[in-house]
Length: 378
Image (cartoon, rainbow, N blue to C red; front, side):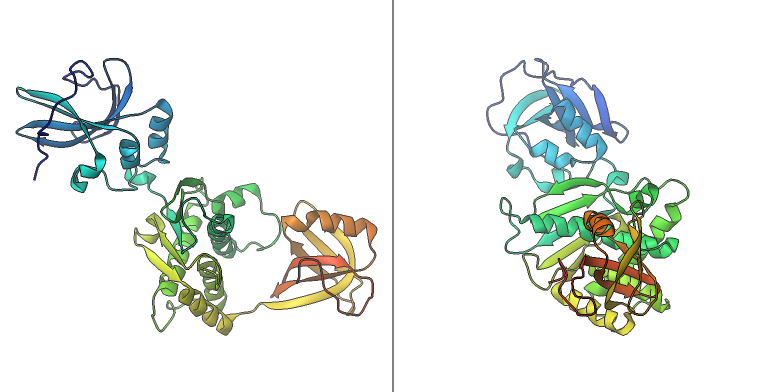
């Protein structure tokens, strides 16, 4: 099947040359397939060679700017999106045939356009795509919480796995080079529901194997969560299983709220699309209960030391006389600094895993020894 010469009036002569000048080749296969050309008046055009037959070479032309060209080269704009964002021309040149016609991209058979979402080169394809689906997740009315959930869920999942692989504390402020491995760059937003595409981190030579191992574990956990396989994933330690499950949990839809499904794909998923539902979350939580070492705790004492750089503290003068080192998140830093200098006794609440305390709430203790609600813990 080949494209046909349109059976309608051509555009006026003088808009483009018969032999299109090639200013910049973006992709070639023996000949330029995607390149930058221009009209006779100097307007930049994106050229896509769609067909070559006895009737001639069929090339689609669309207006572009230098910014759009840069976005195509960086992998933040798919080729089809750039081609179909505005008006489209069809340029035909072959033998005695030469002409230029307007076309509607909706009338072009899909086989003669790049696939939706495909980037200029395979290595540009996102390592991970996370798409939120739900009745309330519609263009123009997407809740901010949906964007936050996808971005934070991906970051937390990779952080949990990399912390386990590097055997580093899961709390506290990480070194900048370590943070860069799980704080993945967002390549693009897409509003088919809401989809975030993530690029690979700048991993360097040292961390490359660890990042690939973390990606493999994430794929393992999400694959298991998205299926009904009766048994988990082979021979792994209880600690590793718990880590993988917690990472998978970050990318399953909450039990309530606007997100009903999350679809995960990308190179790290071997270009499969994994469908995670609320049932997936229930399944992960059920398995976590079998291996969970985490418990909710509340301690009273005095903040004896505070490490602002590492987001850690030491709680002294506790009720059982045992000093406890804990870690907290960025949003509690101001409270911790204020309580260190202004308050004698405090209460902290959070979760504790073997040897690790992560505090999520802290407040002054007015009545030592009596449980009381903490700011942010209700």
